[in-house]
Length: 498
Figure 1 (cartoon, one colour):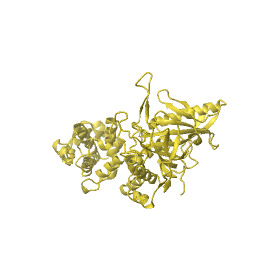
Figure 2 (figure 1 turned 45 degrees about the vertical axis):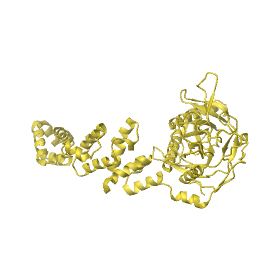
Figure 3 (figure 1 turned 90 degrees about the vertical axis):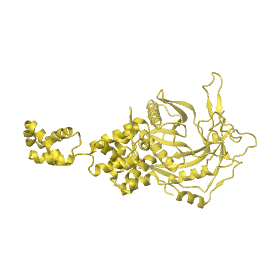
């Protein structure tokens, strides 16, 4: 297949003491597979159980216990590969990656090395400046997670919790196509969105269900790649950005001082704002990879892959294109709405509520404006606010048919949010007397009173028509914000002769 990569001319340079530098970033994202059971055992993957409560004899590496592949984990990996527009390898091999650590009871990790389940693919990433980049995916392989060492329960003992041991992970390895911390953050955000749409990983970084190893190097623009350092297990998108900034600056300062970069694994300390050395970077031969003798090669049928492909959900890029084409949204608005599947579904439910299709741009403005602001303050998703999709539709309909103005609509929204009102906005407007005044006679009376009380302002507006806004403001204030703005403007212009 043709590998898509970012355009070479897209560069974000860092100023150093001796000239400009380019940071080169590759990502290894570890995504926990959404499945009820582990990769090679039937033990639960539920989060938050008591220590060592979700551990089978296989996970604990008891003698004679053999791994048995979980078909759903395989299907989830294939779905993810398809979502990344990647090549699915019908034959893949599980290998033993040998290293010794207290929370790895077998003394090796079952992973994939030379023959992964998913090959080359790509992710299109939209950046905040309107630019888009295409990041190449090198591979996706399945592997089992290790357990967790706990060091803070005793002054002289460490404890091991094997609940995570054997949980299925997808390691998604990118090409070194990223050139700034902002690009890296946008890439992980987009990757997490794709995984959530697919339902293959919940992307919860607080629980460790998505974490990243970040490979960082620096070079002069156009020069060969420099020596990279790997920052392990970064567990938030904000920290990913900070770690890259700190590490790039560290490497630039070392090189400019005449030093060289050692290839090594480092940890990011967000409290100190620094990376520190963890160990010299291992090469593949250090792990003594070899095919796991307890597992046959994994052979998939074309029909299995094709069936999964046919049942994929609409993914973010396709949904964005449809929102632009079907609803006339701008690329920016469509990008914001599709970033979370639940928000996109909420938007469409509001547009089509009651079987009638309404002004999609107006619906989008309300969701991205007042409702999103409330959601951010409350710390909840847009779709979990007290305003239902049907209520958004109701407010838009009231504005569209002239029952209320945009200003009154904001008051209605405040009432719905503040009082957790669950009924029809139309009933609320009726009950609270919030209807817009469209009676021209009533509006004329208000206008006449303002003109009579302000002869100096009348002379000014006749000389300078842009002052009409002052009269509009006074009239809206006098009518309690209920005067129909269009009718009010027409009456004012006629009365003032402008």
